[in-house]
Image 1 (tube, rainbow, N blue to C red):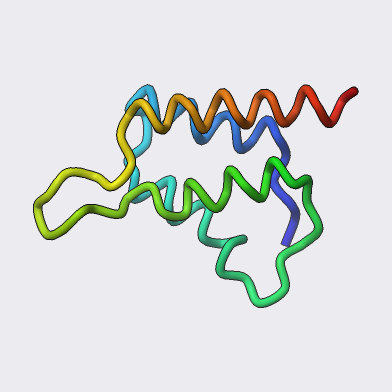
Image 2: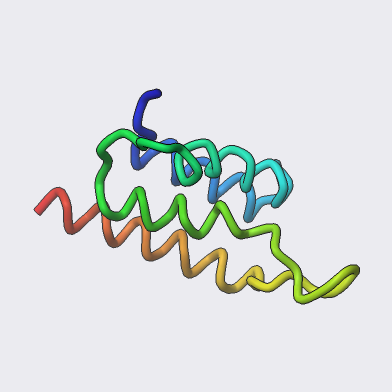
Length: 89
């Protein structure tokens, strides 16, 4: 199993925010690594973003609002980009 790159994670977050993929699709994509018995080594910022994405489809209850708002999704993307900038310094 390969480790996702910053650009792959950014693309998934961007696609989710833009509505090109569903929260369930983003969750399934990220859960491959989050739920792996032995995930590959990866940058701290990538892992943090995967943890967010792996739970992005959670709701407060059946038929209720999502636990994480659209604003939080935007914040996650900003955090991921900041993390990438720090890793390049």
